[in-house]
Length: 164
Length: 123
Image 1 (cartoon, rainbow over the protein chains, first blue to last red):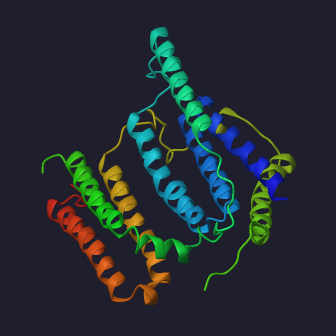
Image 2: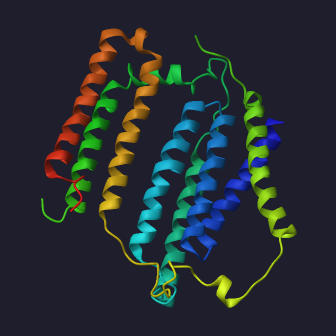
């Protein structure tokens, strides 16, 4: 049952991810990306990481996608004004994308497959255990992330305001 | 205590998703099928309060909307960090409380900066 669900979800996520790149209209790409995020949240649930699944839907499908839509509206993508990309840029993007693919394949080949050991705790992804680890063991990265958010706020204000 | 959970516990949710999406899709397609179709130039024209429509709707708009949205995302993430903390609130005790106070005060520092710089003010 879980196996079939995994295959269906994987098919849907790969299909929607491809449609993000292949669809001509930018708003359609965004809708496919939202669908892709939902399927990835389904993968998280299959991995028993409920908190991550909920956060993925709230933050990515809810908030980040609004930003994507705003960017599309700010870009002013009219059919007439859309620049025609020259062949050399297309070739360059194919080469860089291929290089990324090679790196990813090399990483997957060298990565050791983790088999579930007897001491593996399947409840690791639950909110409770996550909180225990995050606010105890990873206290410093958690506080540093607040500094990261602070810099993001300052950066957004600097870019968005006309005069500071 | 931690509740044991398996993916099949999400079956009711999956059924609900399927039913709700199925209902919406069926309604949309059935109304298209059974409704009468009358297409004329006047009917398909864009309605703009009785005035002749002019120009393109794809105009670049103010970056202020984007600024508000990006600040929303940051505070959204802040709230999400509170869920695992609230669940373990008693267990973490004073230590966790001070930790969170520090985190929130850093955020409030940023909020103070935003308000003082007038980033949320609409010019």
